[in-house]
Structure formats: C-alpha cells, structure tokens
Image (cartoon, rainbow, N blue to C red; front, side, top):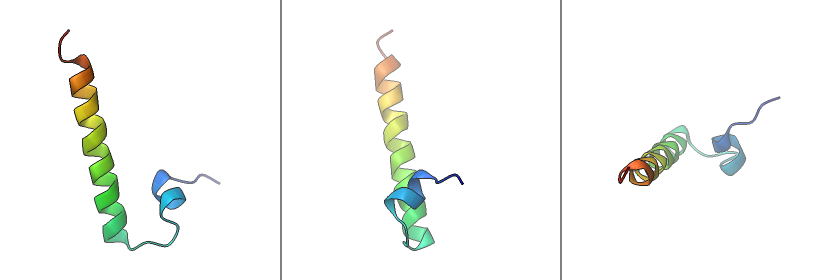
Length: 40
C-alpha cells in the first residue's frame, strides 16, 4: 500500500488544494535544483 506525499500531508483535503500544494512543491524543488547547479 503506497502513500503519496499529498496523502500523508493532506489526508482529507480537496483535490484543488492538493494540486496547488503539489505544484508549489514542484516549483520550489525546481528552483532549488536550478540554483544548485547554476554556477557550474
């Protein structure tokens, strides 16, 4: 039985809120990844 991050953080949240949270998390990770590899 696999649990996604959204199910762990938001057990009974509306889908739109879950999607917005995952989008923000994805954007944040993308920015961190770009900034980490930028100077090289």
